[in-house]
Length: 208
Image 1 (cartoon, rainbow, N blue to C red):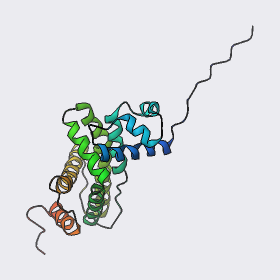
Image 2 (cartoon, rainbow, N blue to C red; image 1 turned 180 degrees about the vertical axis):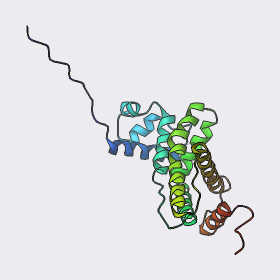
Image 3 (tube, rainbow, N blue to C red; image 1 turned 45 degrees about the vertical axis):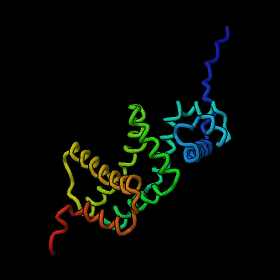
Image 4 (cartoon, rainbow, N blue to C red; image 1 turned 60 degrees about the vertical axis):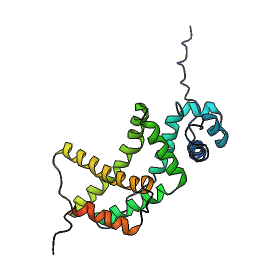
């Protein structure tokens, strides 16, 4: 009797990065035009030129899709090494402000935040896909500043994590409020003033 050959696994069609990018871009465009309440998976599939089943193989529903569309924008933020912590902060804040001036970023971010007030699962996805991923910039900035001698090293890992969270909340919260809530400009003068306050606190720099 001939031994049966072992079954071969089916891996399916590999996921296309180009299709993903087209879908996320179409999601942002549709959100700007239609708003959260009118946006459907069908709208996105039509704009992206893919079958609706393709969307559902990648995302469970609209919430997950829109959060990932926002997250892709924020993943473009970088922290170039400008030689000092103060200059690094100014650079990334100006990048963030420029991103928030884009209609698709403003609309998408405000939509998911508003919807998340009624949806705990959506809040969790925002935290994991956007907030936690962008804390990488704070971690990198602090590591560089510590290597330069601008900041002390922290031996307590839990304290270091809490500090990272606080820095992220202060920077992201202030810039989002300024740009999207107050609708005030986040220009170079404002960024320099904000960064100086962040660096030196309310008492200002120590006298020379």
